[in-house]
Length: 128
Image 1: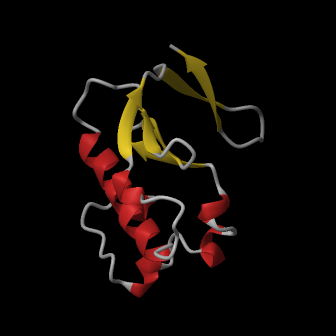
Image 2: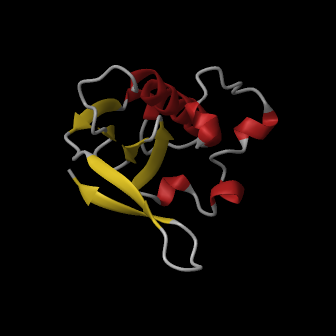
Image 3: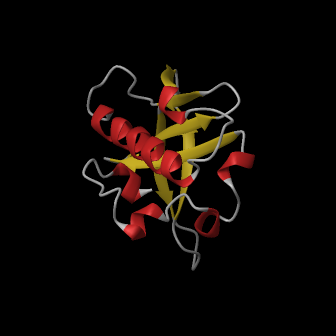
């Protein structure tokens, strides 16, 4: 996911061209109805979903009105569109370049770290 977050991702780099290929993902994204892309930035989770059925991107961001995450969201969507179009260029199912983005409300969450004996730390997520 970090590569998709890079606004200067080199789409011509052969290593980057493999990101969405079936051999890397494990299946053809053309067979998916939703592709969920969790993004962690500045101690906050954002979920970006490529909805292939409805043909748009859904962005779930607890900081809906803040501009802090917009460059990252834009980079992920742009890079996904470019790499998807290159990977599945012969697809006639849809044109990913025409997908619009929709922001939907997402609850704010608080994370706290909990330690139990010798078990490693883990996160507990609570609605806020």
